[in-house]
Image 1 (cartoon, rainbow, N blue to C red):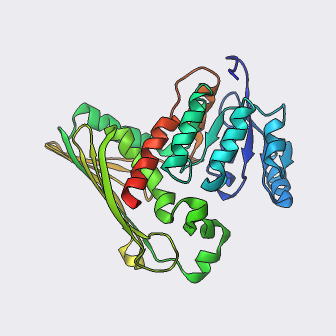
Image 2 (cartoon, helix red, strand yellow):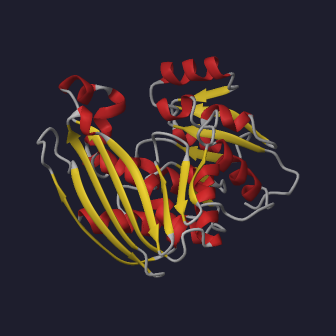
Amino acid sequence: MLFMIDEKINWGIIGCGAVTEKKSGPAFNKVPNSSLVGVMRRDAAKAEDYALRHGVPRWYNDAAALISDPGVNAIYIATPPDSHLAYARMALAAGKPVYVEKPMTLNAAEAEELTKLAALHHNRVVVAHYRRCWPQFIKVKQLLEEGAIGKPLTAKLVCTRKQLTSEEMTLPGVAWRINPAISGGGLFHDLAPHQLDLMVFWFGKPASVSGTAKNRGGLYSAADTVNGRIEFENGVQFTGYWNFAVPEAEQADSVVITGTEGTISCTVFWHHNVFLENGSGRTGFPFEPPEHNQIYLIEQVVRFFRGEGENPCPVSEGLVGMRMMDGMTG
């Protein structure tokens, strides 16, 4: 279904869990030509509670019922990754475009299937890699394109987190993330999609990917330590290190891009500043976090679904990230 330019996007959410409470859900009512009109969760009581708290007119405990609602003309899939492909297939078959959480599927094989499916439906599927729309990461891209550090040569990423406690592993918002059957992997599969998408956003297509993944802490079945290497087609050499079983004092979040004439440094999750160091000295660029993490991307998604702009993150680019993760952990 192709939308008329003047048609409002009326959203239905499948899976109104924690990520939708602040990061995404309220934003659908705060961008132009967009409203959140329906939500679905398998637990009817939780679906009703979410709808009441957020002022959503309708709620369901069945995805098919939400998708078939004639008042809903776009679907946001915010469930764990194991059901992304199935729900996207249902929505597209009903003629409704899809905005899908990251990681877009369980693995690259499913991502390839979703990419083919999207091509049959005017490519109206967008992956929620919202950090590529944040001002600080656009600033990094701008600095690279302006030649602020000369020719970029290397990018080094370090992401370490403290070991989970036994209590934390039983929390609903954590338990599924460390179950590969539901999440596709462990905490790497939860955080790395954001980080790797930024690398694609900044450097383009990868030419080769390799890596190793180990379970060093032995707390759960998924890998908790990953070393990744990427050579991009533009020649940039990327190295990434993820460890989710370090002491609390050893936690880190850093990205350093080195060029022939300087460096750009930032974090992906911890703060919102970008630092440039070159022949002119060291310059900091401070940024404020958005009220809702996904609002900038949702605004572009609405424009795209209305025929007013390009796809801000097509599944073909999400597929690149899924292949990179598989290449590092497979």
